Image 1 (tube, one colour):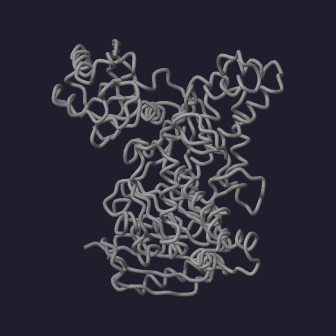
Image 2 (cartoon, one colour):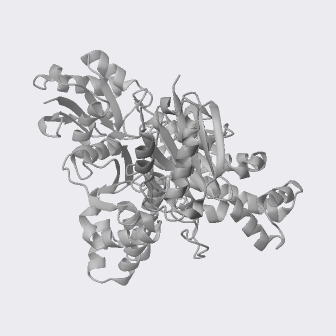
Image 3 (cartoon, helix red, strand yellow):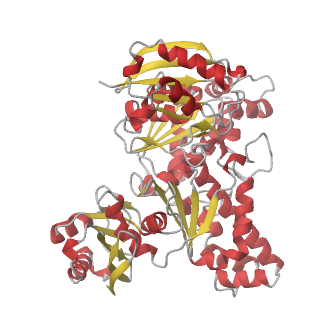
Length: 299
Length: 299
């Protein structure tokens, strides 16, 4: 049995784990990530955490999952949103030099998708498309056991796929971007405008939907349509064997998943009907997927 | 030097070629495809054509490019539009049994993209996205030297990506599909409606554009925007190192390519700017790409 080291680095905390080739987490530790202290302090802390792992030197490689687009070839972040001074810092090289072990990096959605593809809900499928439907929307393409990250790490930035004509510029995303129409945050924002200014989150909108509130039903119908438009655009590019969908909004999956699937079938060729759309299975896809990165590259 | 056999099967004609591993066509023959006579007559003709190739038995494999979505694993067509009775016929198996050689299949846009990725305008790039901008619109994703065809061969059916909100149902594609907004056929159709009912083809619209016709300028501006929306959706899924664009409409590339590129940059994250968008290079991507299929699978 081979073992790998996974690092799940976030803006507030970092977790380091030893994971078996079948996805079993046999050791995990957690710490403040010191994200505001700059890359050397952040990485030196991770190096010390890794050295605490029992028999860490016998592991076959290290994988690091990081928020934001990652240049997987050069091993750095191309756009750091909550890790100070991390843009273009040679993260992989720094860790390799300190630990004498091969290091791979990818963004957090991509490693979560890799975990679901290799040992989760997409196991055994050649082309897995993973979508996280949460406060934001993220995606990951795993083809034949390996993440496709793209030229500068922007593969999977499906939040920015245009799903409707509108001139309303909401944030850094383009007008009509999927995330601004159908994410958890968008559901709450749209509900505050259309239903009740006191609504706090998407959960409340799903509660109103369950109570039969017609405005909430219209809103969720529209969200399900636009989410399906995004999925159809993805499918016309990669025609996956399975869509694996995770993230906080899927806690209400029984209220909107069937709507998404019905809309999806109206938005693709008949020959594409019947694709599996399943919920994610893993509790810890981030840390498991990070550890799977070296394995996906043949280590 | 290795050699491969490429078969470019169309609704009216079929071509068979011997192609070197570097993409040089050293022998080619052409015949009626007998597309209306059923798969056995079509394939027996191809088998005889292959047996005429000098030293055909020393070739390393056979690749077949076919119009319509192809199940590359099972080696059959899932939707035959102009090849009678070809749906689900075991094309690859039939040829393998007759010629005792490994046979791979993919659709014509995918093999053209493979040729451009391996020996054409995308040579040396890890992720190549090929688009044919012609009477229709087709696409192909080539990642690390291999075509991604998808679950049932629908990867690359980018003609059907939704690029605008409209209820107008024009044909079998979905409402607002890229092909119905921005293909060569769409340019002519839209110009007949908006400019002059006697317009025959896209070329005439580009001529009017060059003459300064304001309606033609508006139309080409809109086509360039919607083509860019389609490209942006693709890029948010796979973030290619290069877009290679071929097909008849690109004969007018100097009139609309810069518009497409400018629109594209407004529709993606700033970190995605600067992607190469280049014209296809090969004269015969269909036949060369078909021959490259066995090579892309390691033969």
